[in-house]
Amino acid sequence: DGGITQSPKYLFRKEGQNVTLSCEQNLNHDAMYWYRQDPGQGLRLIYYSQIVNDFQKGDIAEGYSVSREKKESFPLTVTSAQKNPTAFYLCASRGGGAGYGYTFGSGTRLTVV
Amino acid sequence: GEDVEQSLFLSVREGDSSVINCTYTDSSSTYLYWYKQEPGAGLQLLTYIFSNMDMKQDQRLTVLLNKKDKHLSLRIADTQTGDSAIYFCAASRTNDYKLSFGAGTTVTVRA
Image 1 (tube, rainbow over the protein chains, first blue to last red):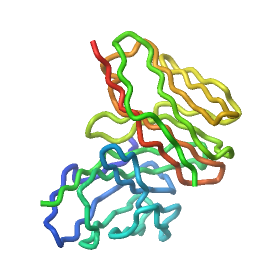
Image 2 (cartoon, chains in turn orange, purple):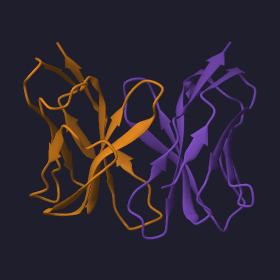
Image 3 (spheres, rainbow over the protein chains, first blue to last red):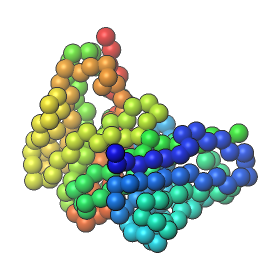
Image 4 (tube, rainbow over the protein chains, first blue to last red):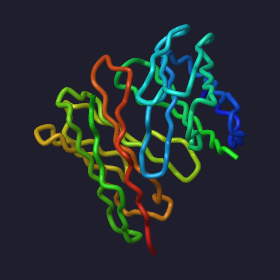
């Protein structure tokens, strides 16, 4: 079955460490996205990529980095520069052009310990 | 950019209808979506409507769109306990790869 896989489901990070969240899709979608979700704040866009080897900053890119070396993969690194990284992170993809909604992964919950 | 607003909470009795409201600011929004998020999970696309439509019905779900007022609503008939979740409204424009999301409406179904 096609879909998006995020791993791990839970991640714990010590202060000062970088961590990488995985997002893999087998839907052959061109566009991929990373969102951060905090309670009561909805979804905030971190980075997005429309094609391989290209990506753009979203609304809250500071302290995060991404790469898009393969169509299927869009990993997100949370760096030590991100001062408040504890959140629920959602990856999504979109295919078929405008009019098609996002397909979301099941999310990764990152906690700083 | 597009602003999408929703009320934050809705409590409904089991068996009643739920109505979740959403407003958006960009009159050129072409596609409007409703997503459902259950606790600890990702978002699931429930339904969508194109801006040239006024209404769309899909089983228990009815979407109403008032383009003049830029108002979108989702009605859930015969609300069940499994409908308890956060519901997100989202909007996008033609040729725009990004969706703008509302803050989400938490729906609680009580017995």
